[in-house]
Image 1 (cartoon, rainbow, N blue to C red):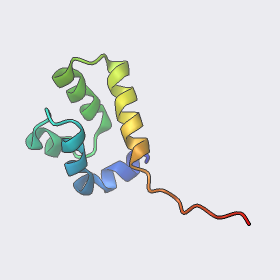
Image 2 (cartoon, rainbow, N blue to C red; image 1 turned 90 degrees about the vertical axis):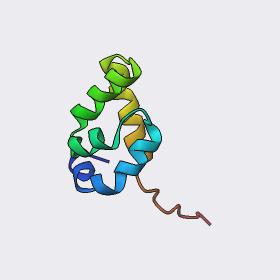
Image 3 (spheres, one colour; image 1 turned 45 degrees about the horizontal axis):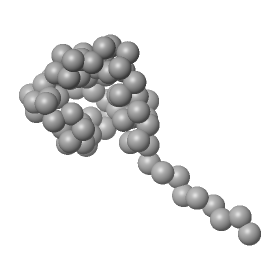
Image 4 (tube, one colour; image 1 turned 135 degrees about the horizontal axis):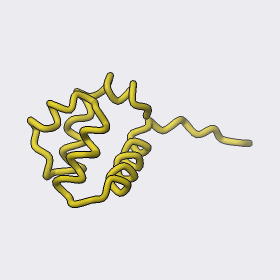
Length: 75
């Protein structure tokens, strides 16, 4: 999922963000409005992660949000 897609789907993803990073408040997530830099910053602040660790965590999470493509069977 790229950054533009994230901003477009922010409303749908807010709940998943709360599930992943429960220390973030609903108000904080609302204020981010799809801004990944703010998400990374809040994860650093709440969880005591380095910037690099927080970025890696967010990038892994974003990759998991990709819809799976149907697998084709090879006969």
